[in-house]
Image (cartoon, rainbow, N blue to C red; front, side):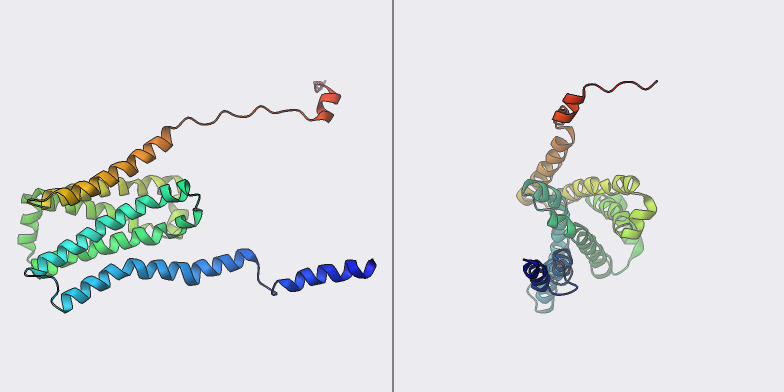
Length: 243
């Protein structure tokens, strides 16, 4: 009996490699497998667009197609970022929250590329013309406002900035993603000239995501369960007030 008690813990200990715990192994998978995979998936549209631009696959008006494609993916990544929380809660998949920051930063990346392509390739850094377009064309004005709203979100996306601002102020600041996404949908709707089905689909998805958040915020909270005294407490009776 004594020998069995000594051997059994040793056998259980040898089943796990020294220095490896389930929690550490999970973190390693997230860091070295899942996050690189998500990064590659997020970067894949940009690589595809770049290959199309390099091989002449963007059609008769490649500059417009390039700007449009980058803008489309900006809006898509904004919506995917807003989808992470509902997916994590509805499907009980908290791991999805670990990738929300990366996806949001890719939305900013595509927005910067969208804006930079318009300024550098379409306008050739003609700043007077660029400023005139921002002022006179409402859809460009709205798109520029959306890009400006994304800037503080990207700057404050690090863990150090969360600690510096405090969790409450950081969360309030990052609510700017909602008006940015709304402005992005409006910008897309105003930009297209004939077929508005695609921007309306994006607007419908955004409306559903915002409605879900409103419902979660205002849902009735479950009532607190009454505290049931234990058998020992019932036997002891009510506590006597101290003198």
